[in-house]
Image (cartoon, rainbow, N blue to C red; front, top):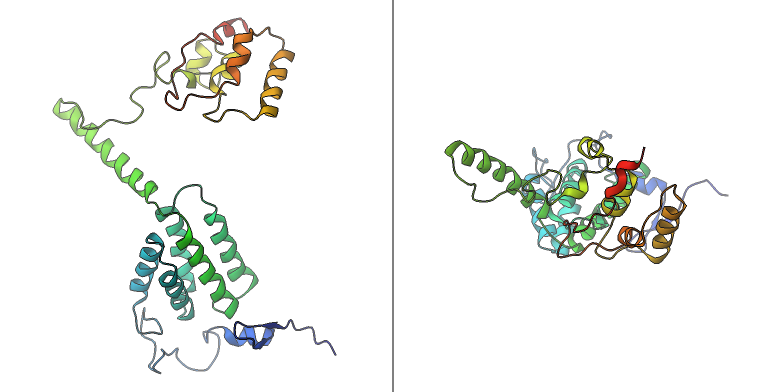
Length: 272
């Protein structure tokens, strides 16, 4: 007779049911006494079951992710979770995703999904919860490592302080912001379109935006997107020149990302 319990097999082939999963969780909600380490001693404050300190294991996890050491990362995740520090693990692994991995990598979504499964579908410290933690740690360790965001934050912050000191001392700063000036007619003239007060004051409307501000690069628009853009512009209540149509879908030069050398869109002053 079907009792409604879900049966699965564990990593060693043992039969597991919902009841097994419940027994896999920590003893926090039971009356079995204080949590104990691997040697039978009462688990001390911030201690893990192997006898380590959770702060040290957390630091080990971060360095393992940073150094792409999969085995150490997996062990550190497992050790934290089985010792009752699942909350600590998930907090830290999400931090490591943004602090120690290359921007844009899909591992951020992968880690978030494992956390969701562990916390919302199962118990964090159950067998399945531990597997989710190990998976998340392995995914992070296998992703391309980079501290680019942390380095950027440090550099830009220190740079701002240096610029302020340089002004006070009447000298040039040792380094300057990558954006040296933001004025119409300068290097970043394309940003002053209809979406800025300066652009509106200069009479820059949709044509300026389409032929300058909306350009992408360096790969440029896919062919179908190019066709849509050009056909849409031809349907507007405005006569674009062929040069303007070409300009609107022309890829940005990877070596000259900002300069605009022609007067595309300069007739926007005639628009409403």
